[in-house]
Structures are given as structure tokens and as C-alpha cells.
Amino acid sequence: MRVCVLGAGVVGLTTAWSLVRDGHDVTIVEARGGAALEASFANGGQLSYSYVAPLADPAVLPKLPAWLLQRDSALRFIPRFDLHQWRWCIAFLLACRGPRARQTALELLGLGALSKAALHEIVERESIAFDHVRNGKLVVYRDRHDFDRAQRKMDVLVAAGSEQRALDASECAVLEPALTHAQPLLAGGIHTPSEEAGDCQRFCVALADALQRRHGVTIRYGTPVQSLVSEGARVVAARCASGDIEADAFVVALGLGSVPLLGALGVHLPIYPLTGYSLTIHAAQRRHTPRVSVTDLHRKIVYAPLGKRLRIAGMVEIAGLGDAQQAGRVALLKRQAQEIFPAAGDYACAETWCGHRPATPDSKPLVGATPYGNLWLNTGHGALGFTLACGSARLIADVIAGRPPSVDIAAYRYNR
Image (cartoon, rainbow, N blue to C red):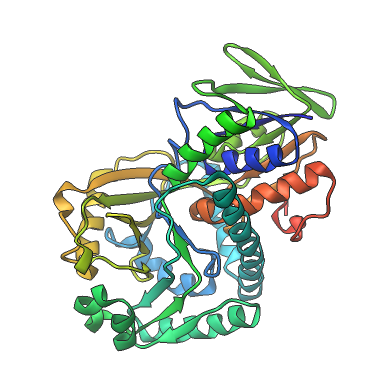
């Protein structure tokens, strides 16, 4: 079957690979001039298969006033005259309810396990190099109450099969000596030894090359999709300035671009941009750089070693697509990172990046069918795109092939 995949970020490329694996003839259409130039470009680099806590959580609610009013808060809300923003925020608050948040965490854990196995298969079959390390992850807490709550949540995930353990501040510093300077700030941490890290953009570039060279996939870069042409309950073509691209099936993996494209067909997606920032320190100082991936939950900042580089990413802004806060937020990210790892490298010369994560209110991606019989969704992965992409790609390949999916795909339907 001819399948057209819209988007050449990590979600679109892994979707294409899973479809080619099933014998489909795949074409990828991408607006930008290369692979992974949007949300996949310089993300946090962590592959958090077993620690997939959604942003929407009951613990968020008492912190919202401070987060939303303080300019240096980890989460920042900049209100717009945008009905879509307010609808998303209301849905986010509803998703923070305890039972729903716990169910979401379990569902993401299942998809994460599927994604881990799928990524390992891709890496093994295609011999992809992307600074991939199986180094574990340490989430550190500064507040004792938050740490105690995290241990209770950990018990639920451990019961569901996740391998985790709680450490006090001194044990955190023993596990990760680069945290010695920050030990007085810490209440404790949760260590997940099975977690991994890697450079998402390098992974995507290598996978795009393998898809073209080894599997005959056509990638049409620099080709924005203007609209989807439908006849009855089917899509017949993706309309581009250079002409229509016809196919038997279409998979939309455009992240934020999925919203207006599908909206024109009457399919309204609960996706809103959450702005994040990253720094990449080149020639990081080995003695003072973490060997494991570290998450400072208080600051909402992640640290991932990528070869000789250190990737630092974080912050959440609910502000739409504007990036007027970029310079100030990057400066704040540098200051906050130096609290934890002051000697990691030359922060003044760090490569900076600002991107918009396509997020749903409950942190689960939108995967599966639409009202159009041959139009499928694989989008809205938010901050978990690299972690969940290979798993959601396999789900889409399963449903297109008519196979029973490995996890309950109903949990990811767009109108849940």
C-alpha cells in the first residue's frame, strides 16, 4: 500500500520505518529543508521509558499560583486572547485529578516499554549512531514533601513493572559525583537504572538516510502541505504548491502543524504549544558533568550527557508560538543550571535553542484513527516525543496492517 507520512521529525521518521518494515511504499513530506528541524532538533535527549510522569498531576495544583506569578518559575503562563489556549488549560486542570493522573502514568509506562523495544530494534537493524547511552536517570527533589510524594508514586510504578529506587541526598551524590556541589540543596532522588539518553536530531538524520538509501523511501523536503483533499470519508491527496501527492493512506505526524491541517477537515485536536529551551555545552568537563541523566524536578530542568556534550533543557511556557521571552529565559536557564553543575563547561558559549512542544492536556499523544477511513494520527507527544515515538509508530503500523496493537490504542484516541 502507498502511505504518505506528513512530517520528518522523530515521530514521522519512526512511523515511516515501521510502515516500511511491513512492506508499504512510503513517501514522507516535510515543510523544512531537512529532518528534525522543529521540536526534535535540540530536545532534552532523555529516553525516559520507565519515568513517564505526566505534567498534569495533583501535585501541580498547589504550586500553580507561584509558578504563574513568578517570572523565574519553571512553569509560566502568559495569557493570550486565544480560546484554544484557555480550553487547553481547563482540560489540563481536569487531567490533574488523582485517579486520572495515575491511570495516565500507567498507560504511558506501557507505551514507553513498547517504544524502548522498538527503538532498540531500529538501532540494531540500521546501525544508527546518535550518542546513545544506557546510563540510567536520577530525578532529584529539593522539597521533602515532594520527595515523599514521589516515593509513593514510585511504589505504584514499581508494582507495574518499573525498576526504581529512592535515594537520600548523600546517596544521590555517591551515585552521581557531579552532584556533590548540589548535595545540600537536595532532599533525595528517584533512580531508574534502565533509562537511556541520546541525540534525537542525530538519530533522525541517520534514520532518514537509512530510509532513503536502504528502504527506498522518498522524502520530499521543502514541501509544506497546504491542505488534505478529501472525497467523502477518505483523503485522496496531500495538496502542496508543487502538486498533489496521492496515496492509499495518510499519517499526520506534523506536531503543531497537525492542528490547522486537521481542523480544516473538521477534526479538532487538543494540542497546544508548550515552549521549552535548551543549552548544549560542547567539550563538557568530564569530571564535573553527570554520567547519568539528571532531572531537577523543582526547576523542571533535565541534563543528558551526549558524548562530549551536555544537553540541558527545561522550562514550560504556556504562551503560544511567540518567543519574545527567549533571551531572558535562556539566561535564567543558564543561571539555574549552574546551581547544580557549576563547572560543567563554558555556559557563556553554550549553544542555545528555543522550541515548541506539541502537547496534549494529559501528556498522552494522539495516536490512531480519524473520521476519515484512511487518515491516521500520530502527533501531540509534547516533551515525550523522543521517548514515545518508536512505540506510537509501531501502534500505527499495527492498526494500518489490521493487527491487534500491543497496548490499548483507545487510550490515545484524539477525542478521548
